Amino acid sequence: MIIILKKDAQAESIRRLEDALKAKGISANHIEGEHQNIIGLVGDTSVIDVENVLAQDCVESVRRVQEPYKKANRKFHPDDTAVPVRNRTIGDGSLQVIAGPCSVESEEQIITTAIACKEAGATMIRGGAFKPRTSPYSFQGLEGEGIKLLVKARAETGLPIVTEIMSIADLDLFADVDVIQVGARNMQNFKLLKALGECDKPILLKRGLANTLEELLMSAEYIMAGGNMNVILCERGIRTFETMTRNTLDISAVPLLKQKSHLPICVDPSHATGIVSLIEPMSLAAVACGADALEIEVHNDPKSALSDGGQQLTPAKFAEVMKKVRSLAEYFGRTVG
Image 1 (cartoon, rainbow, N blue to C red):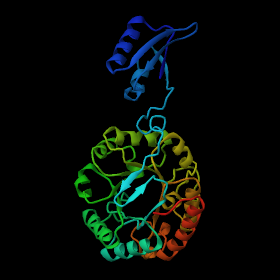
Image 2 (image 1 turned 90 degrees about the vertical axis):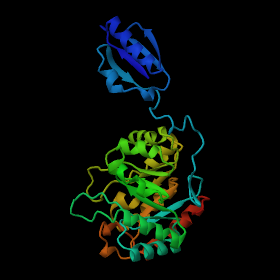
Image 3 (image 1 turned 120 degrees about the vertical axis):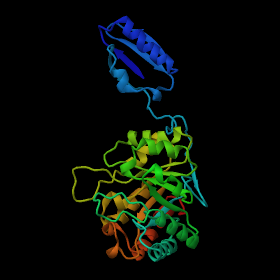
């Protein structure tokens, strides 16, 4: 990181800034140039609050010469991270497929759907027990009872379960969950991320509706800074000016994140598009560009779904999609599961 000083910066103001930086364990090297004076910083600059530095009287601007995320950065961890999930692994070169309904609605619904997903080739089961909804009048999920039903689905199928957390207060309810999902709306819920950094569960971290990839990686950094290195990034579409799809799937995020980070990457084509007919081509695109996992919504009766029925595949359609996904994965020398 480089701090560019104002031309009229006072020596006492500069001294106070350098002392504050040194107190954080940062080496501050004052360099006087012909046209500009700068302070070159060496050390873990992720601990520096850039806004606070910019507020100092002597500072004109701040420039980073390295990314602010360290633990999620491939430069510091060149080998891919493989995240173990019970009898599965995300990020080891295989393709994992997480499938299931948007919301857990009843025991019959989740068990029937889970069995169908497994028969079609899914390797993990998803289902929303807690549902963040735009409208307060929409179905909010079965909460703790929904998690119990997911555990029953795991017992029936043998597949790991994935479900979303919305509040630190509910963390104890997730003791039997295999992968804790952080939804787009909570990507920058930093208190929640810190708490998840102290748990021993894999975390599926979804990109926010209008967040940059660096912001996604910084959210992953929050979890990893707490000691939990088992983070899976998830591209689920971002909000753009386009209105024909629910969101815009940023498929370029997959190879770009692969360059920037060692963490495995999942793609959620269901939330990204919101249109059933687009799930298959977007799933295939995700496989082609190197995604480690897919998260696809499947419901045994989408027309009767209590949430997001328009983006959930029937078990029969999911089976068709899985045949093509498996074939494409094999073309690239990968296995499903």
